[in-house]
Image (cartoon, rainbow, N blue to C red; front, side, top):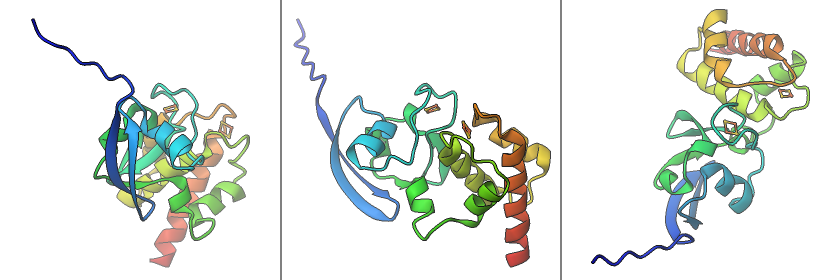
Length: 166
Ligand code: FES
Ligand code: FES
């Protein structure tokens, strides 16, 4: 007979970089990265919406990749480098955020941090993205206020601005 030990509330030690800060903490093994950010690390900018990987509201960059933080365990982020909306805008409103505001893309705002993180990743990896490419990449980020056209316009405007600054 095998002895089985179950520790449903066991804590896992994690060390990671969050928005340029070294964070050392423990997290319940089952806790998502989203909950860890919001509830443990005091970073509520990342939004909890569907909590099942469908809406993109919880988007963050982990090791340079866009992830839905509701689908990642906090323990899985151990050793990682994390960027959230708070880190992105720690020096103030970014050019991209300014374009979202100028385009009138921010309605209720629930989806916006995730939209901005996804758009930022897009601009970093494909600064010359076409309108269709933008729409395709951003299709993983839902907006119940249906600001889609304005969001695409904001991303295009930010891309133009960055090209002219380059
Ligand atoms: S809250 Fe994570 S995808 Fe919707
Ligand atoms: S601005 Fe309201 S959900 Fe997108």
